[in-house]
Length: 85
Image 1: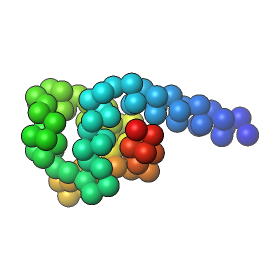
Image 2: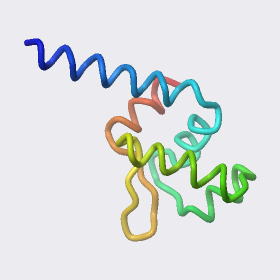
Image 3: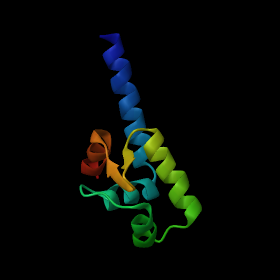
Image 4: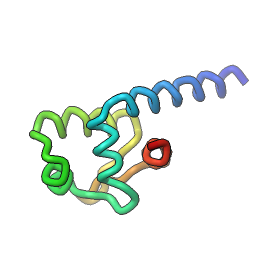
């Protein structure tokens, strides 16, 4: 039981940290359900290389986004973040 609470607490902390960043929220919204390439994101959101890499790397490391065959896609956690707005 304690383990589940720890996981839930850590899960909520990650969601909170992700949602506090306007750029991360924009990235998640832009990827959406269908996915995008890094180049599409960069153009659509008008981000410089550093902004995109820094925030995208964080979202990937924390499990909100995965990259498959050159396309960025939301994980279940990413979809939860998207739905939370």
